[in-house]
Image 1 (tube, rainbow, N blue to C red):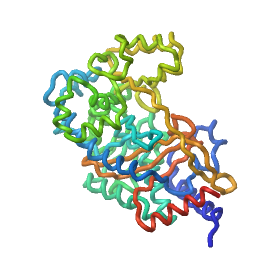
Image 2 (image 1 turned 90 degrees about the vertical axis):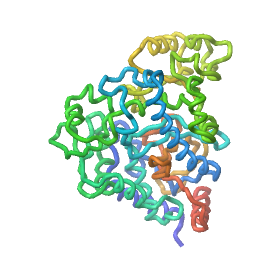
Image 3 (image 1 turned 60 degrees about the vertical axis):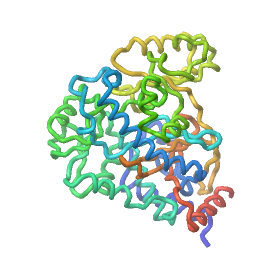
Image 4 (image 1 turned 90 degrees about the horizontal axis):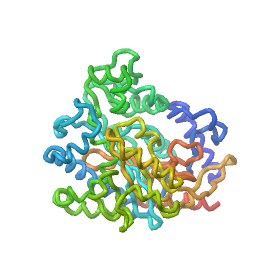
Length: 440
């Protein structure tokens, strides 16, 4: 019978094979020495196991957010106050669009954390394709290792994209995103329909159909990206309004409360349970419960002690500082004067939306990774779970990144693994095998 060490060696060897064929992303040279087994992340002995209640919430999030997104599109079409809010700082060419007609997003992604009780918390909604390639690679790899009954079908993502695109096209990226080109090549070859290729913006003429991986704001700062945007059919659409982090705040905004109660029905209360109280900076009078009751001015946060100031401020969107971890300020880690300076800067910025959320520190749980000697080592880590859904809310892919800190994405010390989503009899056997491996 194969020992746990031998099984772990096989797992690492399988992943090394996949990474040689499709290196997912470049690792900065200063971090390369921290890689174990020559891989850009820590290897899990198997898929990540979650509580059944947590999985139920994750599956329920899909249709809940699909309904929420449709409601946002309807509100944008019918409410001038709402349009003005989301149009803030956008070019005229991207304002006042009929989103119901021009919106083409093949999927949406949620960034989730867990409370101590295992309750899901939604921190962001995104449409970025970065991360999807590595999740699908890991799904294939662990299925080949015998965990197929625990994971989504290996052709799930492929079938979805083949249903989305009938004609070949080009996946176009910018210099801003080029470190992830390995994942894009994987997606073009293994997931998208036959005939798709990958190209840097400005490096030749792409096909008429372009899957853009560049950000909407890059059309205003990169001439090559602008040329692509003007001469090709783009998917996802150039609609920055639906890429704002501020969308999560709407479930707490009193101005639109009656609308969302009606449109969302029973999902309204579910979304309020999973979305932390969030407000748009400068619009605090329309939100309750986030700031201390006696506080009338958001600038007064600077007067609190750092232990009382557990908030995070984020650039909402349509900015080069709204991605890759930039444009995020943890106010509890600042002095009072630094906090006031950041708040004043954001309040004076009339070109961008900013959101304020409570800083909910990730709860650590002991999770295994395969150490250099191929034994399973447990360490306390914070989980970030990234499910992808189609526009009807059906789960397409799900993975987890586990690290020592709240900022875990892209760190070579983080464990990256697919998430188990079934509880069949064979899956229970694999679950028991994983627990046995982790306890040795």
